[in-house]
Length: 119
Image: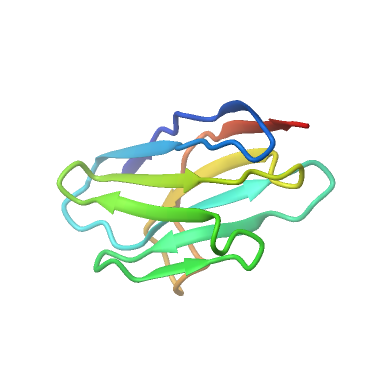
């Protein structure tokens, strides 16, 4: 079992930056992929970014070039550097870990952190 707790969301002006983080606890010896999903009202849930245990990454087209996912395996923590935030980026951002088919399937989900972008 893994527990994921996001932090670092919040309110930011458009073109600003945020860096949510998500430490994993519990059975952390062999965490495979980790990632971030987001869900905005009226929209489908979207995989934002994923990173494998070896550092391979995958990004949604909508964030490519603006967001960067990294992980610190020693701390069992995944980060999402979000730059140049746009009005379409606000959502609840969920940290995810371990699952099935790369890069979309995950067994463990955090409780989410809200990201709001003001114009």
